[in-house]
Image (cartoon, helix red, strand yellow):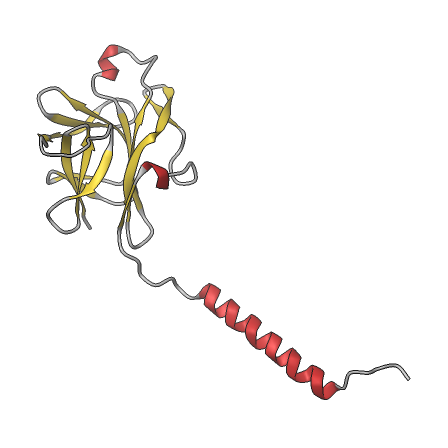
Length: 182
């Protein structure tokens, strides 16, 4: 006579399987616990969150992915920056366009408001950061500072500023302070 599993054994096993599956479904749909803001290094930034090429002033420039940095905010929004290859641009554009800034949140740069969007950025002589729209029109200018005490300056990096919730965007030893606003 062939072996038959009794329904008294199968029913509890089926209930366990359904309970485990439902628990996984609920866990997958539950909102993630609020995480803290995180500073991103170049190794954290992938083409999934920052494009490898960007449009600026009628051309497409390659992002130097090794020279990217940013902030991942607790609500899953980003502020990212990267240096770009500006070969092919005129000297007047190269003067004020060395990088790309992309922010999903409003920020202040040294106290000056900047709306969410994509921008060209450049640290220029005279200790200034110039932020431009994608057509190379100036949107914001802010004085930058030089940090002679910075250990191991990198071409581009973001570090925490002394003021909580503020960050410094460095290009070499020059920096401006960024702060998310509402």
